[in-house]
Amino acid sequence: MRRAAFAVAAGAMAVSLAACGSAKESGKSSSSSSSAKKGDAIKVGLLLPENQTARYEKFDRPLIEKKVKELTSGKGEVVYANAKQDATLQSQQVETMITNKVDVLILDAVDSAAIKNSVQKAKDAGIPVIAYDRLAQGPISGYTSFDNETVGKTQGQALLTALGSKAKSGKIVMMNGSVTDPNAAQFKKGAHEVLDGKVNISKEYDTKDWKPENANTNMEGAISALGKQNIIGVYSANDGMAGGIITALKAAGIKGIPVTGQDAELAGVQRIVTGDQYMSVYKPYPQEADVAAEMAVAIAQGKSLDSIAKDKVDSPTTKQVPSVLVPVVALTKDNIKDTVIKDGIYTVADICTPQFKSACDKIGLK
Image (cartoon, rainbow, N blue to C red; front, side, top):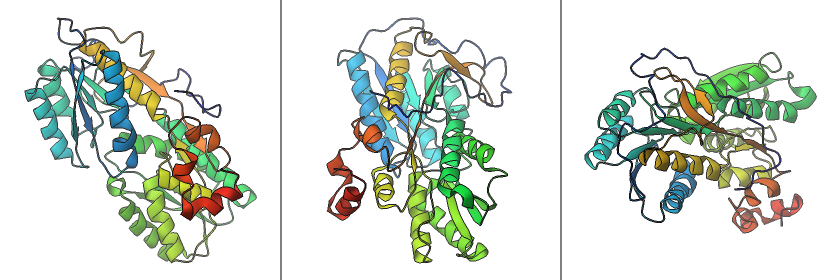
């Protein structure tokens, strides 16, 4: 996949999380517990967290399936399940994967702490686990995601840019993600590093399950508490919540204030085109998915991850997890062509449907 020239350099820097794991869990995590090397006929379990965010079914699943096939000459099998934002269901899905004797698991956890015992069960059954997008707790063998603090910093800086000299002239609302997602805490931390002292953050929410309807309810409460004339911008941690936030803003008659986002969802990109949403964070899913598939295939075949994962991160339970952190891009109306269109995520026709054609024409998106 081609990287956009605007990518925020994550470099070789790994995000270090608080580490307090036991010696048992912090052992050699870069190789499979199975001593026998396998060929291409491997079985990869893929567990994704929910299906409300468009990316998981539209991008992550098919991209990982495609890459596994490529790496195994078509002989590798991907066994898929989606937890639909239910941590208990996801734990049951891990049990099913163990019963089905998959060779490796790619896991995007609903709740990174709650899944810890299931990860341990998989390891005890000889099944290594690759943490995907969110750093699950337990004896993880590899991890790939984006530099999450950089994501938050990118969002925060974009909001400051949009506000300009008016940054302290009114009140800012922060709509963070779910407390069950460790990424949400990192997005929040990065955003605060940029925004604190430069804007007046007057209301802040941790949004249950990342749901747009919960963000909508929170935003309605913020408008009521702060007064619609006083709100000058909203930090939204992702595009789905931005949609709920913008609905609340419009219902209150608030227009033209910057709202951030993340994931470059099609609806989010279209809101950027119309000016309802100021920006999103484009995360190159093909690159992240390819890395996850490469890790999974390598470890299932008994190979080292050293040639794939150059970085290490620590989780609250496991130290020095081999990791790959992928750069991100600040997506605004000015670089839609050079990001999601250039990389083949969407076509102009996908974005500029009849409803959005006039707005597309205005920004030269043809």
